Length: 521
Image 1: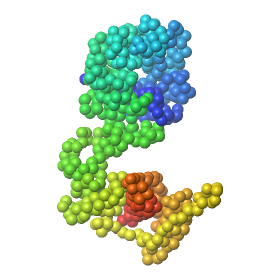
Image 2: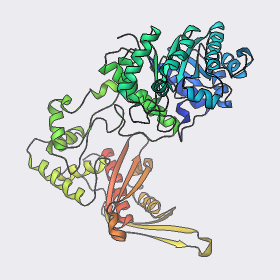
Image 3: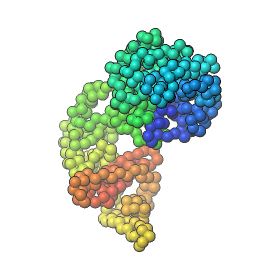
Image 4: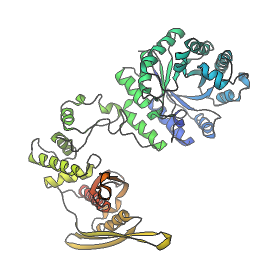
């Protein structure tokens, strides 16, 4: 197939998504990451629409871009106005980008009802703007907005609009599936007809309102489209744009189209943009999600061990991801063997310890435990069954209290911990922002004199889940605690009818795990 270019509009169309916002510095960092990744066009925003976009283009002009063309976005001139007098068009030139993308109306409904100009004037608006920008030495991409909705109602006028842009010198016509409601068969059919009419390839810009934004883009490429526009992680207005993170590996790996992009950094790119946007990673994202190559069912794990492609459509390393084997009540002994080997605790297939561990996992998960995200708790479980676990302290007693300071509502939480460490009783008391924080501080105070490395441990995250909510106040609670020493991160789980007891179990397990790593048996 002919060359296909990738056009990223995360910094413009993507920021129109609910909850998505970037500072000027964020936008520069995202653009630099995209350029380094090998994206061909980076749409920086709409010059003059807001101070951040204006600042972005000023900063972008100071930099040298290795792979991408920075692109300014705007629209055709206003109705009944000379193009050279339209300030919005002038701002596109002032942005000083090598390429400019302008959007124009294709759908007669929008022309007459929104722009409130004649159909003939709309064609002139398109033609005048394209030719003016070309005269000033810009590469011009023309976005035909609502093209597929328009084509369904009035194919003749729809074709007139894109022909007007082409005749005026547009370097590429991009068909926009703006409302996101078309299906792949229709997109492919229409794209073929437009290419035949224009006599040259077009680009495709899709949205995901019908859940087929990626499929529509691939269908257009199959019909001959030479550019795909979209956003990283599918950010965008309403339910989002075509997700480039999914499109790029489908084009390059599945369809054999060489984009000139190193996909082994795909997951890194997806997570980088999520982090700057302050958006949680989608664990089920195709190719790059944590769950994308996670195997839970015992039958699946057994097969993957023998031949990975039985349950993996691509090698995860091709997109910078990795295979994950989880432990749950659906596990077979293959799950246990793989996880134990990864922990440096190899077990023989069919060994009695394997069945004992598996039985224990299934028993605990029936009580509400989950080990998928609590890999440290699972390692402790294996070590105990193999006799590779050391008890660094024994618990005698712990409790927590809180006091309310009358009408002021000020609450003080205090925790008491009694342990045996190296045969000696240790008693500590400390307070905290809440009962769990107080227990954490009291436990640290007790352990640190003997195990000073405990001072390096920080609690990163604390999650609470009510397991059987129908039981009301008798429901069991699952607590997941994630800890770090600044280098490694681990998670532990606790389950109990009492949230404090569940928290204590997860807390203690986290410290036990860390000490085992620092002082192996």
